[in-house]
Length: 595
Image (tube, rainbow, N blue to C red; front, side):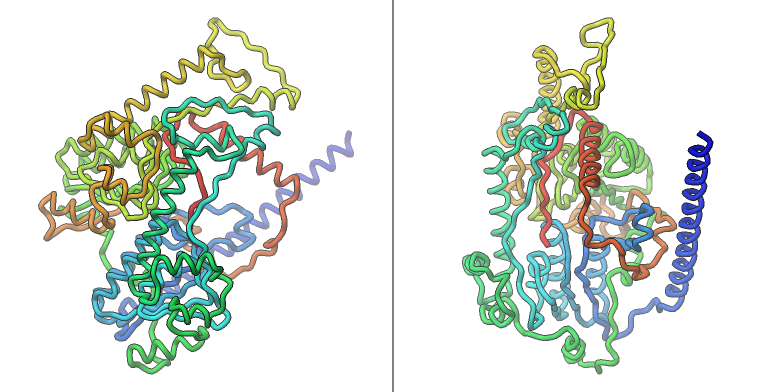
């Protein structure tokens, strides 16, 4: 016993000592990072030199807006503290560059980018607007994926590495069906739902996609793919939508750079090191005098989003992620509702744009946010919604009451439906040797229970409860869209739509950018000639956001997960699903980023 006690004490001491050492290392890293950042900021001029080039570096994941970094210790030790690029910085940076006389051209460096179709299209539209000011755009890639090539297709010239390729495969997404996993764990899901196309429950109760679910995704992807192909052909005169399909089906991604040039997908073949010469010639300067600036640099020099004291203010409120009833990840109504209330009661706020990028989530949370937005509008302040990648199910619930709804052509919206997902873990309890005995005053005192399946009466009660929630959803859409309930029910049923079709159906008012939504609100509030813009929720960077990228390579990259790690991951998935809200207004989950 004494030996065991000493060993335990020693292990605790060693563990504590290691933790303190790691903390010390992290503290040193932070100190160095802050010093480096301050030094860099002091050395960078606030002015953009004449004949500068805007560099758009398409690399990594692009997210909607900036959020505070919350790394874990594993990320710290691996050096993985890089922050993703944000769409609002990219778009506003390009807009600023287009209006800056010192910026002569744009250089798009196409690398490994991952973003949803609507995000990619928003960047491409910003590039097109830049060109309207008479400024040239060159694009280069060691290789192009669909997302980077779609953006690059707006350029005046596209360059490809001699050993590069055009890795375009079409448009699609994957849905993970997990019934087999839950069968192994001993977890069964009991489902109540409304909507033929409300297929978000399928991954939990089936190993295959239903025909209605497949049909709606076929239509969704097909329409979006057609839009992207037509966009590519705007400047690529040798190409047609049909030709692009033929090239993709014929394996263009495995073709050579020479083949890509021959069919008209690129203009020139070049190594990256030669691009400086080409860019210098483009703007008529010496190669050694080239000056490159980033969108982030330009954003730091303009007052956009920094006008919180203005008397004629348009608030842009971001609602990004899954709608939840607690926590900090996603859209927590407990955090968002007070902000909406404060903006409604602030005399300096003359109107608001709600920027929605959400697949939905908690029906309860969606309703709370919707009611708060109604309160904002009751103050006679105009409210517009600008839809990002998704504004579906709960995301549409919070959008539909606005005065006007703007969307990107490739936004996914609709999915008007509700479902309940009630887990029964009795099988898991039995596997773990757990036997639960229930004592209650009434038959349903413990309903719903994690350890007992629902009986037919309880299922009927839950179904009626979900149907009432669906009726509430339908009623909100009908009132917000000024549409008969019968029509709403016809286009609802949990079906997802792209924004172009949604506009035809009356679910969206206008295809347009966030900037168009802001301008509409400013005109509606009669402050168009003097408005300013402020962003909410307020971005509060923490100490980790002050760390620059130190170039520390991960020492564990490329390793395969062990069976124990896979088991732990499975348990985490199950835990997350079991703990989620029982009644959800959420679109189907599928991996849908174009890379």
